[in-house]
Amino acid sequence: MTGSDSLEGFLDKWRERWPEWSLVDRFVAPELHRRAVAWFALLQEFDDMLNTAGDPLPANAKLGWWSEELRSWAGQRSRHPLGRVLEPVRAPWEQLAEALPDLIEARDAIADPEQARRSLQRLAIAVAAVEAVLFDAPLSPEAGDAVLTQMLAQRMQDLGGAAVPAGSGGEREWQQALLARWPARVAGPRPRRLYAVLARGRLQARLRGGDYQPSPAGLLWRGWWAARG
Image (cartoon, rainbow, N blue to C red; front, side, top):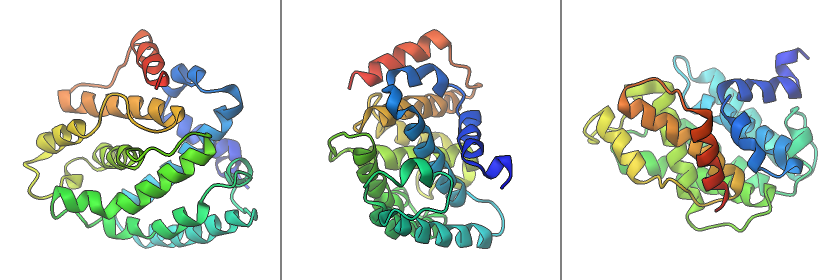
């Protein structure tokens, strides 16, 4: 196994994409630090499969593999390095596995904004259900919607105008619509609230048309505020 395929390789890949996490992870309980990064690294894998460009067959094959892998986690039999951190937690892995194939349809489901949301709704609900167990938090009815909006915002970051649904009025209008559905403090466990603050900041910077250059002091303040719940 190469370094990039090791557990630390997957964790470092996510940290490289989200360097600002190092400023807000102090608001996460120390015993959950590694679990939070492993979980978000897994979700990044799914985002990459959703937002793939070019031939979708490799990503589809990877999705099929992950569906089987997550089902094995329900029986505590993992093969992937991220499973060393996540699989011991008795989360609803099978629910997440059943929703993964929705990513294939969601790539093309941009006929209108509501269809874009519906195509990812089951997966977002499954993600929220896993997070409630991973981070020992109540499952809020609004948590799935927060996850869903962040998935759609990530599509904008990865694909730009290609991720804009028809009938949404264009890229700027779609970004504004996402922000309107995305409160500054979202529902869900603390790690999700912190992650959402960072992702929302990136979307706001994109909407302003400038580079994303958050100040450490500003991130610390927003992280503290989000962590309060």
